[in-house]
Structure formats: C-alpha cells, structure tokens
Length: 241
Image (cartoon, rainbow, N blue to C red; front, top):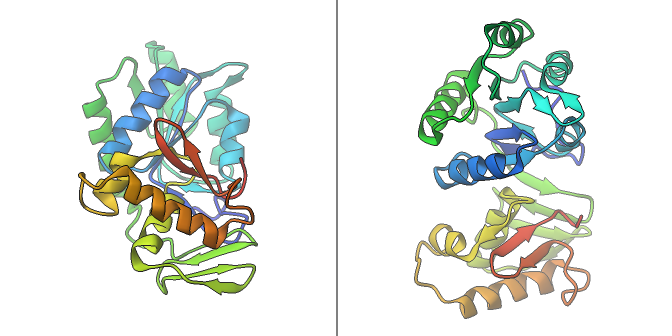
C-alpha cells in the first residue's frame, strides 16, 4: 500500500499525519494540537517540501491544502496518486462545490473547509487512520543513517558499527527524540514521556543529554544529532541541520 513512501536511509520513520499547507501559523498550530493528543504529525509548506519529506519518512494520512503558493494541491494530489494510495484529506478555505468535486474525483478521501474546529479535525483523522489500519502492522524497529544505528528492539546503539553503551534511561531518551525526528520536543514533554514525571529538574535532563552526545556525537561540543533549541527543548536532526 505504501511501497513508494519508503525511507531511503534504509529505515521507515513513520508519522501518523503530514500537513501540507502554506498557511504556516495554522499548519503549525494544527500539528502541535495533534501531537499533544498522540497523533505524530509533521508539517511542510510546499509541494517540493512534501517530496523531500517522503525521501526520509512515511505518513499514514495527508492533510493537503489546495493553494500552495506557487503550486496546486490538486496537482500534487494527482502526482501522489500515481505513487501511493495513502489517504488524502483536502483542507481549504475554498467552499465551492466544484472544488469539492474535483478534489474527490482526483483521489481525495475527504474535503474539510477552513476554518476547522481542531477537535473535529482530530476526530476525522483518527477515524481515517483506524480505518486504514495504520500503525497496526509495521512498527519502527531500527534507525540507521550510515553512521548512527539504533536498534529499538534490541536496545543497542552503534556508531560507525562500534557498539556504544547507554543506560536504560539514556536509551529511552534517545529513542524518544529519534522517533520525533525534526520536531522540537519540549523539556516538559520529555519529563512526562521519558521519566513519567513532570517534576524532573532541568539539571537531570541536561546531564543525560550531555552523556548521550558524548556517546554518539563526533564533536559533543558542537552536536549534529541532538540540537538544543533554547527556551523550547531539543530536536533530533538525523545529523542534518
């Protein structure tokens, strides 16, 4: 079903939802809301960025705007339909019946008018993901980019094929960051999802981040994998800033 949308680094890094919309404020706030409710969501703002995304990730569902700056969501949908049958939900401020008919005829699975209530949109997305069976068959078992390899099942980490040692908590922290690749993960989120404790202090987190960097980074003082986003948290970049 998703044969085309394969990670070219030799792994599948899965997102539940990809938002393709040039209204950055709306797209970002929608993604943030979805992530809060456990729908792992990424955002791109143009058709070229969409194709770039699929060079390294998969998605179970697309939210696609019709107007994409210099491009068209209709055109992108047609091109995607030549490669995949991933569900596509159009999101648009255009309300004409003609637009809705075109969207559905070229392969869209639904058409949602802006402005949309976030709770309603989230409910629709959950229904589509459940109906398509997303997340029930394949799971991410390994990350590998040619230098760093993390086997989530075996709980092993390799740098240039050499095993490195991490504590159980450090491995859990690194895995969480990897599985949220390219998304800024707040300290609060890490405390709740890695430590299961919202009262863990910044100092404790900082020590663990430093130890992970010392284990996986070529230059821990100038990290390429785990980037500090001052005032917000951390972002795992896959070695590409």
